[in-house]
Length: 389
Image (spheres, rainbow, N blue to C red):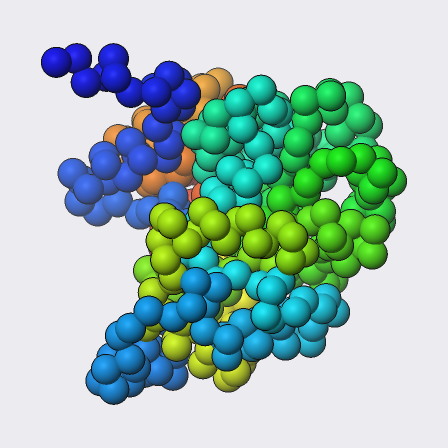
């Protein structure tokens, strides 16, 4: 039997993540400094872990409601209001998901399918385009440019919209560039989108990791609030990647439909993680500030380091990535990252893994120790010098 002949074409046509092969190589090597994994190097704060442990000890291992424990949804509502000034009804406008990734998937599947188009500004998180293709829809890339600080411009949206456009995915602070959008940036694109029947899927998982100014959301604009599906979670800010706990906020009409997919596919999010998330929102803010301060220190060291070794580097304002321009090396993104890994045992991710327009760049994360960052920069400089020789 030819199994692949039985697989749906849109699944076959979706390439695997451009990141994974590098991680597979690292597993076979020793002495590698990884600047590749987009995961906090901090452990989940103890009080949060303890709450999860306590829930297990007390036998709290049964299903929650499909939408998540109401106590958690109430804490999320309080957090969104107090932290970002946005109000959502915890009863019918908040859904607890299995990480932010599930929220992205079900939002796309709810609003787009065969024959539809979804605008995907790139470079961007690798899952966006894949989830669009899994839904049977067509991803339409919009090229974000370094000279624009990787911000989305209104004219780019105007030029990309067709009568097939159903949604646009916006991810700020951005993975992989670290770019952010402020109030004025959003105001310009709101003028384009406010009167169009296009859903905005706004991935704000790195909202807490904003180093200059304050995080802004397109959902803060009254005319965009009800047509925006806002996605956030606990993985990055609270160092809870393995807990797989996220949430989405949206108008109740949107959430009712998204919840159907969640109900049938997953039932509910892990309850141990939900109890831990309640503690995170109640008492975790000081730990978040501590981690953000350390990321900020590392951010400055890494940006300065890349510039000193001769690679132009946009200064990231959010998330925990830098996206240096590696074209001065004379190598493609894949060649640069493969040779750097093999010759100097430093893992970076080629920029084209995040969209074709990422060619000529590479992503490095500063979610690792200062010592690792400094040693990696020494090795990168040595590698660049070897290319000149």
